[in-house]
Amino acid sequence: MKNIFSKITFCLPLIATILISGCAGQQHSTKSSVVDYLYPNQATTVIESSIPVLKPPVKVGIAFVPDRSSRSSGSNLWTGNSVLEGTLTEAKKTQLLEKIAAHFKKYTFVGEIQVIPSVYLTAGGSFTNLEQIKTMYGIDIITLVSEDQVQFTDEGLLSVSYWTVVGAYMVSGEKNDTNTLLDAVVYDIDSKKMLFRAPGTSTVKGKATPINLGEELRSDSMKGFDQAADNMIENLDVQLASFREKIKQNPEQIKIKLSSQ
Image (cartoon, rainbow, N blue to C red; front, side):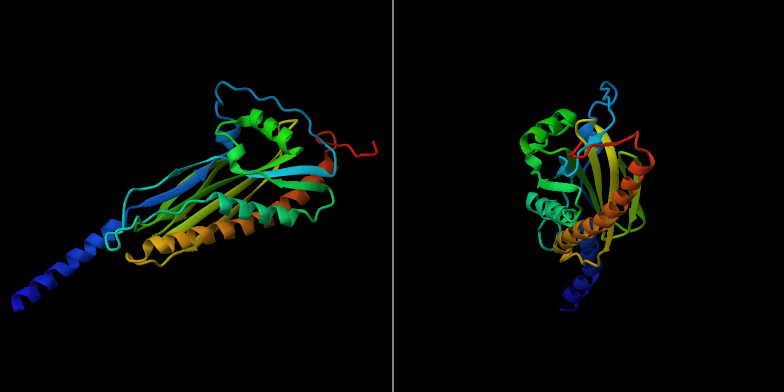
């Protein structure tokens, strides 16, 4: 009996190491990019823009651009389940978009706001795809939302970069951190001109154990998207106010055509 006890005591550290190593060194990310969607062939494609002509109340569409996900194949050796399983589902995307749309219906210069399912946006579809969506939904302006979420399950300081239409955005994290970036870019479809953009960010600090890591990361993932959406709405308000001031200061850059004109 004493020998068995000794063997068990000897093996406990080894078992713990295996369990931890089965969960460490993993990284999960779900990401999409407005740059990839609008400018898929930057080296060969020249997109000419013109001066936007806005006719209030404008009809607005809002949609997530097509995403690409990458995940590790690791699993939790204690439960046998995949450690990292969460992605941003279509239902969750719709929920977030409806939340954003509801906030901006208060503005008088905004008419209808259409939440557009991701299925109508094709990867690398660019402005040709936007013209199709404009015809289908009768919109003038499109708000394109991209996402980038990374969940770290490794020890030490880690970082990733995300390319937006205005440059790189860096995020860092530690073990079980969930970093989320939502980036909203508002385009006038006819002129192919970006009007303004607003990011939303979130960092959720996790405290998962090897046993409940998968469940905890899925919960942190959804929490991260909700928090980033709230932050993005705040920034959209700020950027929208700045955009309206820009129109007053530089009327030659953006034309406003009232219905009576």
